[in-house]
View 1 (tube, one colour):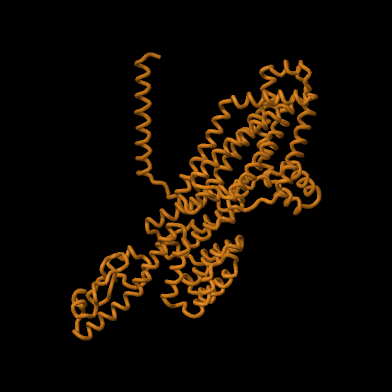
View 2 (tube, helix red, strand yellow):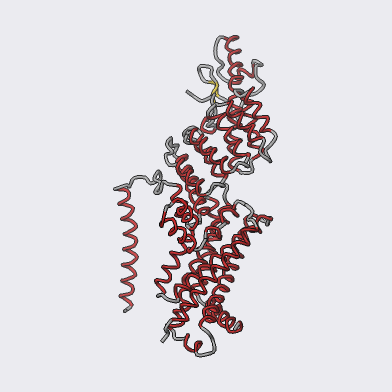
Length: 258
Length: 293
């Protein structure tokens, strides 16, 4: 079972990294990173802060775009090109197929994030001439961004297992936006009464808790990220991904592919 | 498509595009739109923060850039109105409450009298107090607040209290305590202001902040020179019953050793009424004495 998932994941990764669109997006993100020192010049006292904020936001935004747009096409493209049928005719379960696709795209995102983070650290070194201990803290923020992508890939895959690519993209993006408001939803629930209270509370748990995965502003001011948050976020992402992937497997297993 | 058609299409494209640029310029000159620099677009800081989708740090940097550009443009035109400055700073610091540079510089932009700044001491104090609330461990913010209370509001007691509070913050420089004491005893003296600007000069790592401190120190030196020179002129007047026509008269009479120069290197000027003025006060914008009538 593991070898079959690994084979699908590897093929997904290989197919994704061959995609020119992906390179364009990564190139554009790196271009933004390169622009940060120039933007810092027309401001006062925020050169380093701006480089961190702009670079990490670029990594995040482009990563989210890749997660959604590649994620929604993972299944639909296979059905459209009819390449899914030869795979399904082999002893490969639908669950294994979904898992393989998921890990393949997660691997691609890990690769892209690593490349963009490399570009960012080169820009930081050129600006500051040396690294400090605080710069290692930024790695935690980049790791959290990768966790965001892991959550969004799961959502994109879940929606694409039962919906058209366009609607899947819309749903996944809406969940991403709603996820940034998760803590506001909880605050809203605390203020509400009766059914609205429970509805808002339920919604705040259904949407991904993305706010805690974005610590860009904090690391830009060299604020330390507690280890507890790293552990909680890792655990939460694993659990949320498990929920979305299980949902996708359940729906895709019952889907009529004829 | 034939070669001639391609050429024609290229020519039409280039000519039309160039005409469009020309026409847009003409329309803009003939019917100028109202200036947009005082327009905020979105005035609620909380809304902007929510709409940032978690990228509030980046948006704060963009707003801070806008503040710097807005202030720079207005300052360049010697503007006396900075309507959007305080709201822009409020949005910036709500988006990123830890952006200390925005509190420090922003309050200076707000505090300095027009045309060097907005001349709004209350807004400057409100901004810096917000900074202290969000960053209680930043002693620089206490210093900036004390500085505004001292030089902007002439609230020496308040300034003494602020310097005292700031001196207790870990990492605060020992001269903060000294400033607190000076506020209570020698607040009105030029030496106190000099002491303060000298500390800013010594502490600053930022080039423009250092340059600003240097300029203030130069202006304070002029404020100190003028009364001394005017008393020398008065001595001459008493002896000769007229004002000196040039510095050489004072040098040759032994009252001065050489022609006195202001910090820019230009000689001071003796006005016909005996008052001393600087040659170009625009190079020394913060002087309180020595400005031509």
